[in-house]
Picture (spheres, helix red, strand yellow):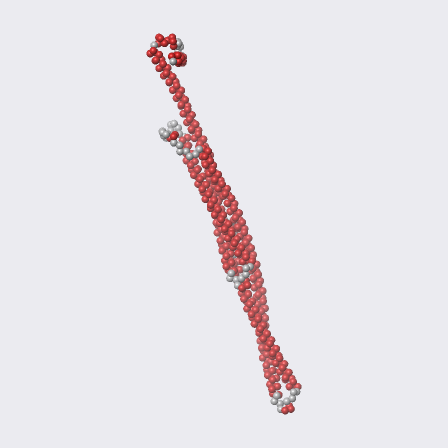
Length: 416
């Protein structure tokens, strides 16, 4: 123990640039009190030197730790700025896509509403055509086209309505993704503000204070990997929603164009069937009217013939009376004078001839009456047929007048 102390004393004395003799040589002259004083001074010097080194080391360590914390805060702020910019970009893209999707939905709804008018007209045409009469109340090409047109309009409406419903569901998904992005971005902004405030704190700042035990509290809910993954998942979810939105908008565009084209094609086809039917009815009506005119002419002629026959029969009665009166008078001739002479033969022949003529004329008169009745019956039938054709013609013309108004192509694809 004594030798270690002597060595230490020698080193200390050398440090102070004092040449000392070996401790064995000076122990006696110095005395115990001198030695104790020397040792106390040595310890104090060593303590002071060690304390200076310790303070320098701790000052350097504290400074370095503070700089490391400040650097980490700066890096954290950069990371927050990076993800904030990513979130802002994705949020802008999502908002733009959502607006475009809402526009597509409005177009689908407008197009579906526009189809209601033509559908109502087609149904009214079917209703009016039920008022056709007789033989014209037939399941013709017009009615087939109208029924098909109604089915097409309803199918097109259903297609557009279902697309609009899908878009409504997708808009809900987009809003959820938007809310997640906005919430994440709001949290990032708050975190950025806090970390930037912490980054700008200095030892001379007024807002610093002691918070004992704060280092022991750990309220963290994530680590850097899960923190970054959370924003990455939000962005990926938004991108997926945008991709689905783009697909739905493409489907909506295709649906609008295809339904518009299909409706126009059926509308034109039905109009063509209407025009053909109207032409057929008009042609049939004209032919019936021409026949009616001929029937009327034949009726007038038959009536004239009947009148002439009646006159002729009436005119034959007087010669018959004369002949019969002559015969009756000659029956009163007396005795031998009651001779079958030439006048007798002539009068008998005349009576038979006139009577036969009357019978012939009466039969012809009956035939004429029968013919007249047949003509009148045919006239009535023709007038009924003409009335039926006129009614059908009027109904189809009315339907065509109703069908003059049809939505334009821009309105059928949702542009108002």
